[in-house]
Length: 89
Image (cartoon, rainbow, N blue to C red; front, side, top):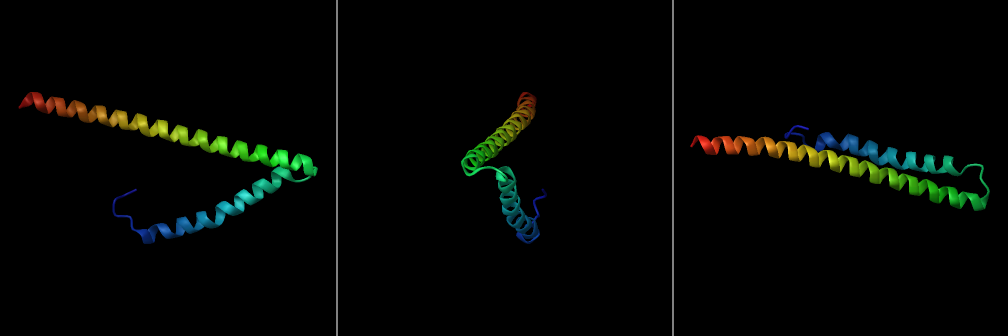
């Protein structure tokens, strides 16, 4: 994302997310419990929420790992440039 992006350019994507995310999660939770007995409904709801949380944790861990590796790569490139310039002077 370029540095000159303003808040007015991000309003529409945020509004779409605010509207779409609850609609999706409500529909998903309804589909995971439809046609089950009341006892099984609570178990299915708990399992669905657990799996949703696990998926979020895995996604966050993967993104964190990618960012960390990218940071290490960029740091090593900068460190090589710094040591090359130090030996020239």
